Length: 161
Image (cartoon, rainbow, N blue to C red; front, side, top):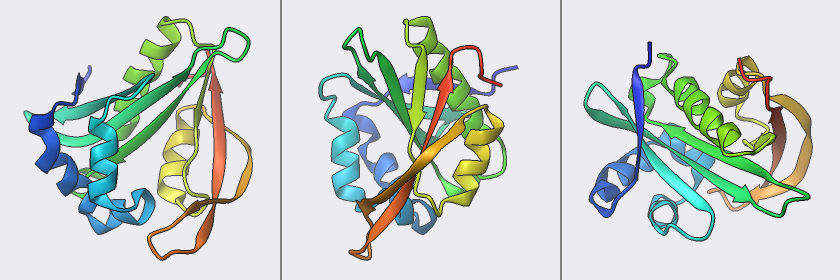
């Protein structure tokens, strides 16, 4: 039974997206909420951002981007769920939905790259079948202004749990 739905973000979602990305538990991984909200709503290139809806409310956001060169074709996913909805499996369900869509569109591999210290997220991704590829050293600048490692994980078609 599917409990969440995904729908494309619109400008009308701006305040709720900002609220989700401003929650301290999310902001520590996503960064500055104004900038990230603008990025999710920009709809640039092969990036698609969706509201994660549960019981009539937006509880998170999920986005994908695509590498369309036929020799390297794959897609990446990013996810943020409001902490009021942690522990319900909603983020995992949203990833399953989006991952299946991306596989159905012809991608054979998906990547996700959380902060290496984001143990909660990594646990969820690995339960879904993502495998560790390696550490991305000094991958992103955190809100504290220092560089932090990322963890690259990937999932091949047929591995989604």
